[in-house]
Length: 202
Image (cartoon, rainbow, N blue to C red; front, side):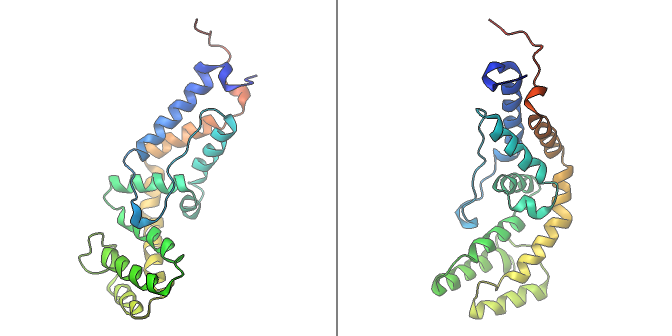
């Protein structure tokens, strides 16, 4: 059996390093910025097999449901990087901005932040204009007259549905994610699957 990762550097550790490299396909250009809230960067450790397996389970869980993907910091980072390759990251950034917006407790800050989000994502010809219908845009505009934590709920729901039905399936079918999921399946295998056949190099 493979008792420790250190004991077989040419099998388990190499597989862990390759897995990290695969994830880099998604994350090396991912930069969500301060306006979308505090999104954790991908955290990886090749020192402990348990941590590797936990991350592998996280990666494989992304295909279970869109909400599971959004609940994972690493999943959000990977999905965001994928959307940037399609030049459609504004929908996710708006959704994330809304999630952070709901956490604001100060009424003054809430109103100020609401107008910033509207100008960045909702208004016509906004720099990161999201794909929503005219009625939803006008409803959101009216909600800003007395901003509350729920004033973007309708628009946020529309972008969630759009991503779930459009971008998310493409993400799962992308060669990069499929390759990454295959690496996750391999990395989450029991320690006994690590090969002992390779001779050590001295």
